Length: 341
Image 1 (cartoon, rainbow, N blue to C red):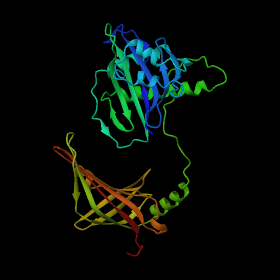
Image 2: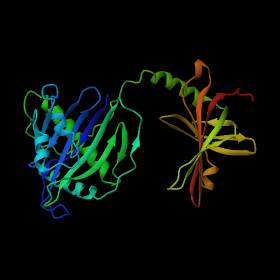
Image 3: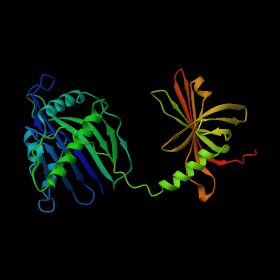
Image 4: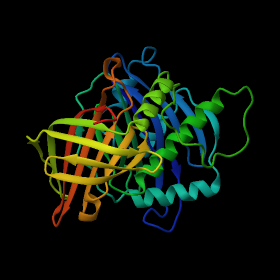
């Protein structure tokens, strides 16, 4: 199933920028082309009215041909207004100050370039699209302005204003759907609703991880072994992945989580470490390497492999140089050592 969410702007907006006396149409919608066409969403109208719309292609199958033609991304004013009529329900209004902010943001975003389109090789998942249609004074064909495509293909606007604008439009759409479910109409205008984020689910393994983390922090000595690494050049222009044949063995001693300090010993290298914690686990940071423009961090995940005192680990090294940096990642595992070692 391919589902597309489209976010665009609908409104006659006047300002002193490039789009003086122009029109912008903004839309947040879902389109499914895979298992029977579906199309519906949210529209911000010229006067700031926020409305929901929805097509029924089973009842009116001919609407699909009229919608998804060659002018889908460059419609006329009449075509775009007609696009949002089916099943229209008003859900609220955008505050006037926020409409002024909206037109300023689009004025900034419309001239930005676009990232490379990447085929994600996924045809059954949803595609989320955020885009605007802009009519300058005179032309009756809209100028297409991409903010974001995410799903079966991935691309986005290179404007620094695009993420904030796209997130705001998504939040307005979510607020419109929420209001549409209320028994009584809300009269307050929509300004800056809470952003739409991924749902947070209960962590069924939180206690297990907590106990593993406590054991890791209590360990005074750890032995970590890493297999071949993967090296990537990072210089702002090129990316390359290269096999890194080294196998590493690191012994951490004198570990003291309270003092956040310890010592690491490898073949040919001895250095002090700084202990920290993060969402991924216990982090052992090479304090000496930081003095030489190198970030060297071992992250130990608080998960016992097959219930034993063996923990997955990742070693990241980022070495800065005059042309950028080289990043190397190793994967492996760590286990506590007897205190007497």
